[in-house]
Amino acid sequence: MQNNRDIESILFRKNWIFDLDGTLTIAVHDFKAIRDTLGIPYEIDILSHLDALPLEESATLHKTLDSIERELSKKAVAASGAIELLSLLAKDDCMIGILTRNTQEVARMTLEYAGLGEFFREPAFIIGRFDAAPKPDPEGALQLASLWGASPDDIVVAGDYLYDLLCGRNIGAATVHVDPSGEFRWNEFADLSVTSLAELAEMRLQAPGPR
Image (cartoon, rainbow, N blue to C red):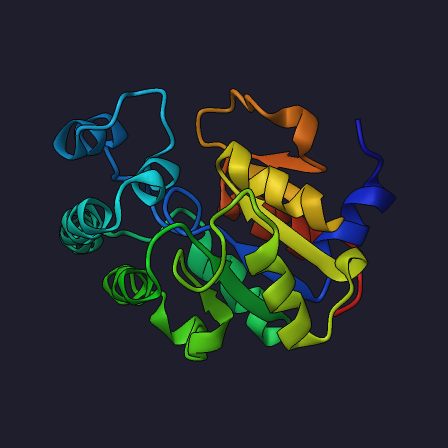
């Protein structure tokens, strides 16, 4: 169990990297259905499988995946507390980025449909699957750190899935596990666990840290 001082040191870091689907937005992806459509076994990572296929087959299935994700982006709704937390971070001049396994274009569409686009007007701060090796590889997080001139001890990586937390750990950043179910399946890889971004925003508001 972390003490309040440890939590405050995370809450007031100046550089924040967010996962998109299931973190900043309410999860809408049915990964079983996506795997079935693409002909990928349930236990296999989708992107790793596609990238291992012959070039022509991989390109065809990537187009199918892109089409699926574009349709899903139209259903995007901001997660509880997303606007409040991003507003707090922007007010405090924090750097805010996204590291997603979607393409950058789909990510931008998702943000606009969810009403979060105003917080991410700098394209370079949205790292998609063709901009860096997908999570849990740390390449995308390191790209953002380099753009911001930030050291890992002033970065937070927040996400709802194991890959997000491993990515953060891989660069030495603080990690926040966001899990609306409260099960926290990967709690051992998290420095802080919350059920919503609303909870995280309230913690930041209540903490006696810098403003």
